[in-house]
Length: 435
Image 1 (cartoon, one colour):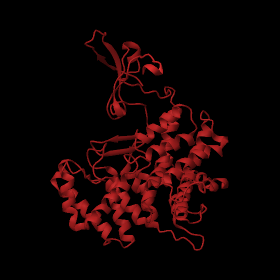
Image 2 (spheres, one colour):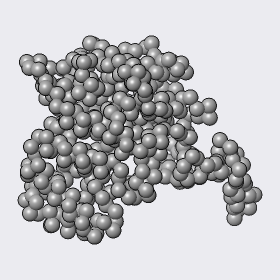
Image 3 (cartoon, helix red, strand yellow):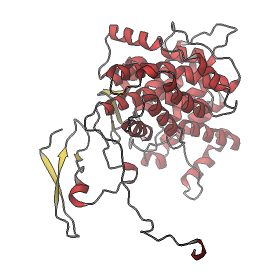
Image 4 (tube, one colour):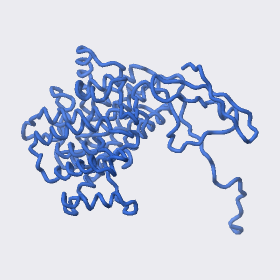
């Protein structure tokens, strides 16, 4: 990074003014480099949630919330989701360029050759209750991968990092499917390397040993698009967690497990599940006929009722992923003959009202990707409790790419946020009789 400009910060408490370099990215806001602030002034910045702080330099993903733009390595998400599959997107995020056909074939071969997990891992599942949340199982199993693959844990070795990336990409669908099968009491399905990455996932989730699983190309493509749209999303909470864990030198399996744990939070990865809970609540009230009453409660600030799956913390315009997911939603409903299903009719009516009602239009509360992806996953037969696991599977490649970028950054240091301390000052411990 080079700087041609500077920012001068002045103080009213007698502290001398200090100059800081200003850096420009290839796109997006400039940043003020305040790394020397504490040494020069004895002061820290205060930024809860790090909403105005760039914690790293990255070349992977860029979001412009005002424009409704999402770019992976410079490529618009709407083009990638139409012209590429998930593995091509993974290659792009990891390597910086879209693959040629030979590169794509080699990458797919490497991933599919690592889809099986160590047979001893099947015993892990019996240690969980059958009603354990699949995300609890996934956190434990992904973290445990480091106990089986000691040969790729040297994070300073580029070859080890590559092998770990391939293993995580390959084994996540297997572990996700195993978590699902265990929760429903069905036998685990071994991966089949003659299927596509996403087709194999659906085979392992929905196939049974007593009959051949028939792959539906429309449904596979729908799930593949969900994976592409969720592959990375810049420096969100789970990605920042992966980077923070990785800054300590932790192995990649532990870092991804930390990301999964963060994604489990309902404010992060549970949004599409919350959408279906909302739709079910409207259904219990009386369905389409009661949507008007529900909308009135949403508009009432004192009601506590929230419209889930609309608007986005980052996108102040239409979520670029939502349009693609909307198209996919209708494709899936058509392929399955669910256009007139009461549950989906309810969702589409709610969508119509939100897109036409001035209250929501003025506030730019457009349907987001979570609204449609929840509907699509339900149509595919994926249980609600598995939604966040699918999200984690999709985001794994983004986490790996961000982790690898951080490890190779010479300026990266172990994460150590500061604080504004407002607790008691130094006190003397009194004997028990005097307390």
